[in-house]
Length: 357
Image (cartoon, rainbow, N blue to C red; front, side, top):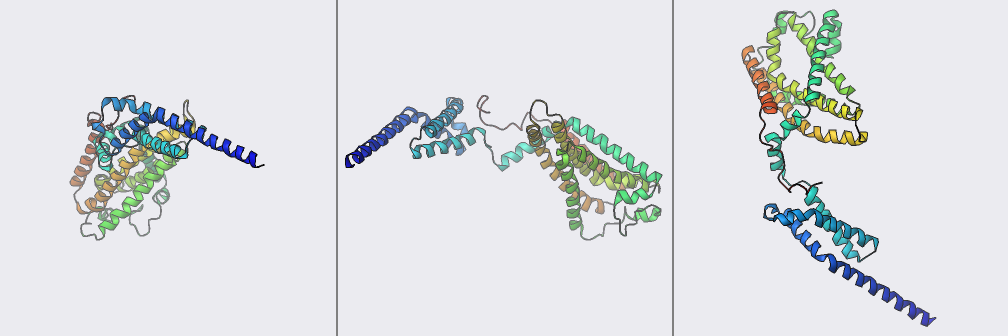
């Protein structure tokens, strides 16, 4: 019995020594590549990408694949646990160096404003035209509904409370809602309320796009049908231009933002309805990534619109000045999105061609 125990113990020791020898040989054969990869990754993590040589940059993908292959072999053959842990950490760091973000918030904002946002918006040209047509249609539908039956006004505008803007209101009463608001208090709270309301509409129009874009389209129609009803009301009292000026000071920015949100939702819905050769979930994910940058900009536009609506519209009491501000904002947005195209500033500096996924 004792002899068999010693024999087994000797065999066990021999197996341990053989495993250690295999681990040492495995490490010695590949350690130089691992060390080179670790040095490159450390420099990238330290923000010293420009100090790397072209040879190191070109070798990075190959070294990364070598490390991943080594990790797979080490796991399969049950090599030294410390070696496996080292390779796991190295492979993870190398993956982030190759495929992870390589810029801070400041650099991202610079690329976002200097072309990235505009490029993302222009990528939704078809959906933007469709959303614009839907919004115009919704405005016309709202006008026609209330012109045929004024009860539709209350349905489209919701609970009005003590608001004097109702069918049958006099010209003087409606005119007082457009002018003479310079002494109104609490404009900051009003702006915050307007931002919350407008952002809710925009986010719903975007988020509901997953249902093949149908809820986004219906939301655009409903939102602009109320606009049509309001235009009908003021037009009946000869205050069309005054209302357009009152709305334009913020509406050119707000409606543009809602249009972009609706177009983003429609884009996701169209991608899911017509995924092509990819799975529906993959098509939706790709569309979501394309539209996410647009929606970041939509939130910024809604903040601007809330400030214009909460402050500018109340403090500026001239129809001409309001039209000038609204027209200027629309011209600035159009110029930024469609006319100003810097030389691909949104392309992130990083690794040369062939080193990405």
